[in-house]
Image (cartoon, rainbow, N blue to C red; front, side, top):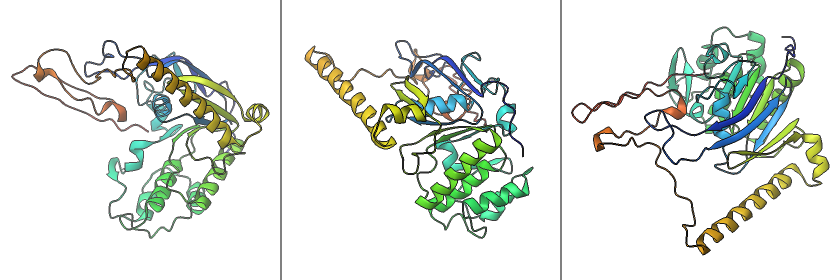
Length: 326
């Protein structure tokens, strides 16, 4: 497998603004954007570490890049195409997203199945069509997978290895990782990171990796992106981060997050002193104005596209069709 041709940025985010829609498909009145004025450009071969506190917007950004949420096509381009509208990006394997919902289920033989079911690792891995046997063998070795494992009997970490193997079987051009190494032991994680680095250096793949675990990451990323409250705070090459801070990567990120938390606590204290609620009110995003019978919970949009039909009081229907993406 040769190196990908560098014909421009692989990821382009231009002034991204995003708010989760209500059941009517529009942001609830008064709601604040989760992501606001976010711009970022990455090129082939770059390994981006995405950092930020819980709730900063990292997962939302990765899902948008992975085609899980609809935004204006000009705001987000992956390989020069719209991740949401151009479904061939994910179906071809060029764009690969491994995140939250993926950890609970995997696509197998055209269906989504629980990873804890009674099935062998061999059947799961070899059930993926159109795979280069050499790449499959390399991944099995890298992740140290025993093909005789029964997935309902092994540990979470062993199941996770099988999932990661399946997700990486096809040679991606852009890979989005949302904290998928949390269950891996130190050795498995180190071997996986080494493999991913090789994918970028030898094939020119682009990877964005969101994580809170910094062991073994000191020399891994080529770039670091720091997000707070849905806004880009910093985006720079790892070499510049090292020049800016003499601390380790973990201590550097910790200092950013501590400063962010202290500023947030100061704002809350000022709000309280001014007679305002300490925390800003959260807008109910799942409510449709009108009769009680016209309210429905939107709990399917995050995983894919939600189709909801809200009829009247006499014939209330909610249909949720989940589209498997990537």
